[in-house]
Every structure is written in C-alpha cells, then in structure tokens.
Length: 113
Image (cartoon, rainbow, N blue to C red; front, side, top):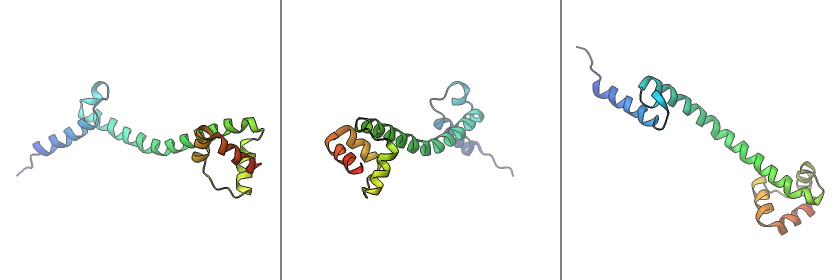
C-alpha cells in the first residue's frame, strides 16, 4: 500500500509560502522558488544579526570621536587614557553621555587626559 501525502505536503508547502510573504515575483507563490528564497533569507538574517552589533559599535565610536574633537585629543589617546585611569565605561554609554550629558562627558575627558 502506498503512502499518500496530500495533507502533509500541503501543510509543509503552505508553511514555506507563508514565510515567503512579501517577496516579489514567483518567489512568493511557487513552492520550489519560495523554499530557496526562504533559506537564503534565513542565512542573511543569521549573518546580519552579527553585523548589526558591529555597525552599532562603529557608530558609537564615530559619535565619541566627534565629541572629543573640541578637546584636542584623538580617539585612541582617549580610550588609552580611560584604561590608564581605570575608568571602565563602555562605548555605548560614552556615546550616550556625549550626546545627552556633555558636562559629565567633559569631566570624563579631563580624567582621561
């Protein structure tokens, strides 16, 4: 006796087609193309969850660098000064201080010098 997969296959296909919602052309409606597109999209999203962290860090560094320009100190000297004076504060907080609380940021820059 052979196995008929009508319901099972339909449900599997519907699951993939649902994930491909919003794609263009046949990638959203044809199972074979939708499956490839969904797999590739998953690879991109996995990779870019890592890239997102790098992007945020680089944007914080740009913000800090712009904020310390008026104090005539380079970014590398600033970070080195923080390490030497045992100020443990991460770049996200430094960038936030530079934008929202310039007075306390100025005190940190003076300590780092």
